[in-house]
Amino acid sequence: MQVVKDKIVSIEYHLTDPAGVVLDSSRGREPLNYLHGAGNIIPGLESALTGKSVDDQLIVHIEPKLAYGEKNPAMVQAVPRAAFKGVDPITPGMQFQSQGPNGQVQVVTVLNVDDAEVTIDVNHPLAGVTLTFDVTVKAVRDATAEELEHGHVHGPGGHHH
Ligand code: ZN
Image 1 (cartoon, rainbow, N blue to C red):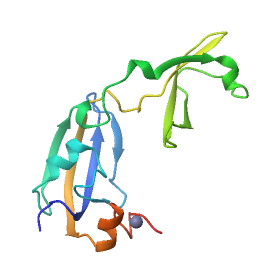
Image 2 (image 1 turned 120 degrees about the vertical axis):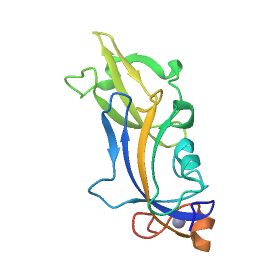
Image 3 (image 1 turned 60 degrees about the horizontal axis):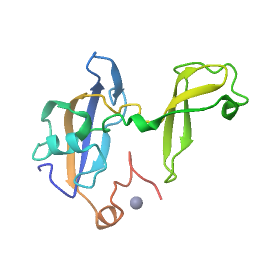
C-alpha cells in the first residue's frame, strides 16, 4: 500500500540540523503515526513521503519555508525585566513555554538580559533551520471515517478521546 492522501502512515524518523545535531528522533520509541495529506506533519516531509511504500527509507533535506518557516525579526522583542519577576537568575538560552495569540503553545527563548530589559525570541525554535530527516515507512493503512472527519490519527501513537 502506498503513502497517499487519507492513509494512516507510521514512520521512524531521525531529525538533524545542518551541523548534524540530533533535534528529534523516534529511535528507541514507537514510530510516529499520522494522517497523510492533512497537514499533521511539516509540508516538506509530507510531500517527500507521498508515493512511498512500507520499508522505503529516504533522507530528505527540507528548507525552512517547507518546515517551520523563516525567522521573523518582528518576533524578537525586548520586554521589561519585571515581566520575569520570580525567575532568578534569568540567563540567555533559557526557554519558557507561553500561550500564543491563538491559544497555541509557543516557546520563548531568552536571547539577552540587561538591567532593564530581557530580549526574547518567540519564533519557533526550528524557524530558519534546514532540517534533515532520515525516515523509514513502517506501515500504511486506510484511515477510518472518524479519523478523516477529525483530521488526525486515533489509537496507539495518536489522539485518545
Ligand atoms: Zn479525533
